[in-house]
Length: 219
Image (cartoon, one colour):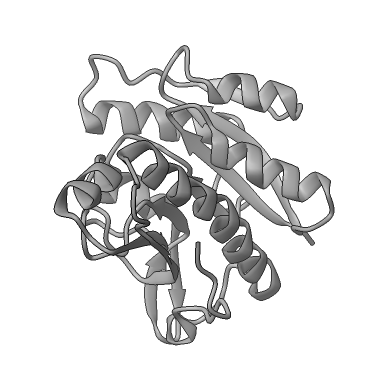
C-alpha cells in the first residue's frame, strides 16, 4: 500500500511539486491524499492543480495559533484526513509552528518511544540555524558547509528525531541566491529519498532505526 500523505504548505510548493512528480514517475510509493494551505493565494494551490491533487485553504490570517489549529483539525476530521487514514503529515514550507494540541492527533507509540507522524523539511543542518530564515542566517554566518534536514516534528521549534540530513558546500563566488538555490536543489533530492524510506518501513517504525543512512547524499 502506498504511504498516504497529508501535505501542509504555505508557499510556492516546490517540494510538493517534486514529491508529486516522483510519484507520477513511479519513483516513490506514496499518495498525496490532500494539500492544505493556510494562505489564500499560496503558489502551492497552482502546483496542486497541476498535479490534480485535492487542495483546500484553511486561512490562518488574524487567528491565534490554537484557534487556527482547532479549525484545521475540525476541517481534517470533516474530510476524513485523520490518523486513521493518513500515514504522515508532511510540512512542506508550512510557516506555522504546530503545538502539542495539533500534534497529539497524529501521535504514534513505538517500543523505542512515542513520536508524532509529522515530517518537516528544514533548510539547515539542525540543530544549527533554526527558524524561517535558515539559508540567510547560514550564508551571513559564512559557513563552509550548510545542508538540509528532514525530521519528525515535536513540540519544540525545528526539533525532533532526525530522519536524515545531507550537506551542501559553499562555493567560491557564491552569492546568497546561488547558495540558497543549491540548498533547494538538495531539498528536492533528499525529501523524496526519505519518503521512499518511510514508504518501505511504514508508519510504525522504531525510533532506534534513526537517522536513516542516505548513502552519502550531498549537494
